[in-house]
Length: 449
Image 1: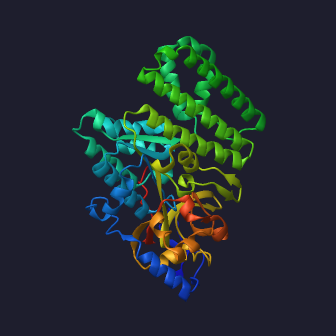
Image 2 (image 1 turned 60 degrees about the vertical axis):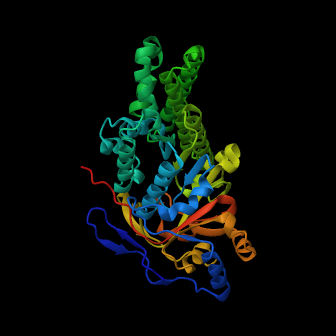
């Protein structure tokens, strides 16, 4: 395999090369032998087409039948095949195993507009997807998933429809807006004192683009607001069975989470910010399971968030959402990690004019990366259960070491491919299963005015 690390200018569509003609590490006899052993334990996937029959996923049915939380990972935030495969996997969970809850790595409050469309057919799905302001999910593939969920739900009893939630808490606008509307009806007097702060959080938020003194003042106002609203919900807790009461108390929780995450960003404490964000996502996932009548959920997020164990990062030690979920749900949590060999994905790339969304690709992985083993298996699409794989002593010895796999978040940095665009895992500890795609393509952004 060769590398043509590329980027496509979003405005012109022209493809440029930033690195060229780098050879993959050679496959030695030992790796070939291990690849042969792994091949015997993989399950081929027929296609990434979300509308195709899902019989090729049957081996997963028994493995997931008694699982309560299924994590659907991804090695990049911008790969078409990953998104399509996760659509197929969700179909399996919904159609064959009765899952009725779906969660996305997106803001809790804003994502409720998508739920309104998916469950009741109200609103415009294109506008609802745009309204969560995550470019990562503003794609044709995710919109197609939303439309499939609406089609599945249409005509079913409301209690048998799939719900669509977000679990993230990075921004204050959504929960602050929801709380403003709630208190206008429930306690207008409270808004006489705290309405201005709620409006600030709804409109301006806590982006750290102001002088430090101004940002610290806004954070202090946000803390006072959260304390006051929390006291109000405690006083009125006799209404906790009221669905609107419970939902808006959750809006307050996500507002508090977002304030804490933004405070760490303001203090340039990346480790604390990451820990708070992942803990918040796990808490919000548990709230959904506790709040809803259905008790099984599929959650879509990056591998780095869904992994079961924490590990050292370049910015510090992380405790991912998946580690919190695994602590609470144990063997009732099953997470599929993803990897790929070659191809394209989209990510943000730094340019002279700021960050731009571009098409990117990676060069060869580090020499001892697990990606080299997966590519040697030669299947274009497959998955494996890591319990089955580590039953083989040779495979177990190989995978027990920390080994790199592809791992690209929101930003592509061609100068740090091995350091920042691959993550090292003891894979059987981090994931329960693995999906591999040999050749990828860029997710397709929705064109907007």
